[in-house]
Amino acid sequence: MKNKIEFYKHNLKKEDIQSAVNVLKSIFLTTGPKVNEFEEKFAEYLEIENVVGLTSCTAALHLALLRHGIGNGDEVITTPMTFVATASAIIQAGAKPVFVDVCPKSGLILPDDVESAIKLNSRIKAIIPVHLYGRMVDMKGFSKLAKRYGVTLIEDAAHCIEGKRDGVRPGQLSDAACFSFYATKAMTCGEGGAIACRSSDDASWYRSARHHGISKNASSRYTKKYEHWDMEMMGWKYNMDDIQAALLINQIQRLDEYREKRQTLENLYRKLLSDIDGLDFIENTQSDEISGHHLFTVLLPHKISRDYAMQELQRNGIGCAVNYRAVHTLKYFKETFSYRPEDFSNAYDIGNRTISLPLYPKLTKKEVVRVCESIKKLLINSIFFL
Ligand SMILES: Cc1ncc(COP(=O)(O)O)c(C=O)c1O
Image 1 (cartoon, protein in one colour):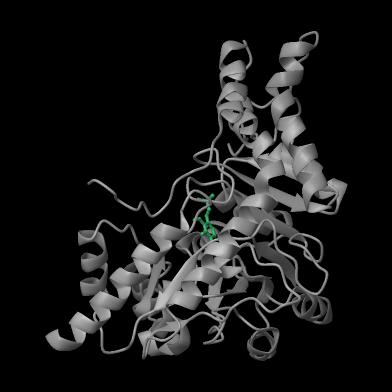
Image 2: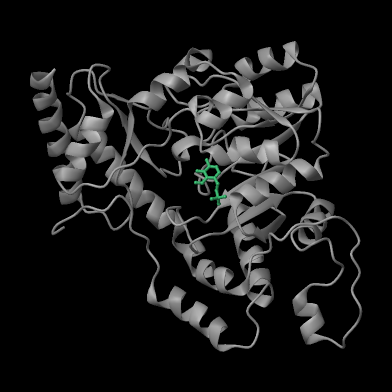
């Protein structure tokens, strides 16, 4: 369609593509020097000791749980307002996800609510909060809680690389922070992920676990005299390769500039949509916080059908998405854990009303104006259709 406003456009530049082409022209394609370089530069950006490149954020969440001994018989607190991966990784580790409802204003889980759930359940061994839409949870609060109850704290930072809250950045107060480089994320290599941690022992474990638990990676086998490798522990096939790393390396230095562009666009959306009756927003970032501004979502008035609204936006050439229908309402979780929608009513309400609008550095202010005009028109029309 002409003049389509895409939901997302990546920002890969010629130099990113050239770096990947250089790897493709070399003899060595898998985990090697580019992954090492990426890990060093990303750790420097995050101001954290260790980063390990993986194939996805889901893999990072899975390994973080395993590293901290979480498995059969254990339970892990997380949010129902997230992508399924957060909860699926808990199940992959052999544990059970336990949801705590989100704050209706921010869509984030809060330390006080999590504490109430921990007090009732001695099987809780970990907490995985999610920095939803780019806004960080109260990591100082969660860190105190984790220490008080002796549980592991793992951040799902798929939406937030650039954030800061109370002077704390993702990864700095938790046992591990998990990042995604999926196609629509702030930096991307199509599919990819990383784990950040402060302990170098943990980092060595993740390096082994990402590659079958074997003692030598392909790079050392290729560059040095052949030596037999051994399998020292159980492992998985979660290693980032040099092609992915080459695509990512240059993007790190553009993260902050792009974050600011998204923030400006989000502020414009908020201003242009501020006077519509019944249209709500997730609370804006507080003045002393930095959000990743990963997604901008509106919450439609209760009386308006989201399906109708999405169809109308798409008919007008505007890409949109749902992030997310609450996880406990999805078939597998409903059937496996017998959840009812009202069990987590705030997440259920957000999940029924939310629409994510286009938000990326290449989006123009003119396009934001067009999206807002379409939303205003459809909300006025849909009142007549009811
Ligand atoms: C909040 C959240 N957690 C986890 C993931 C999983 O990331 P990946 O696709 O890299 O496994 C995503 C991906 O969209 C996400 O949005």
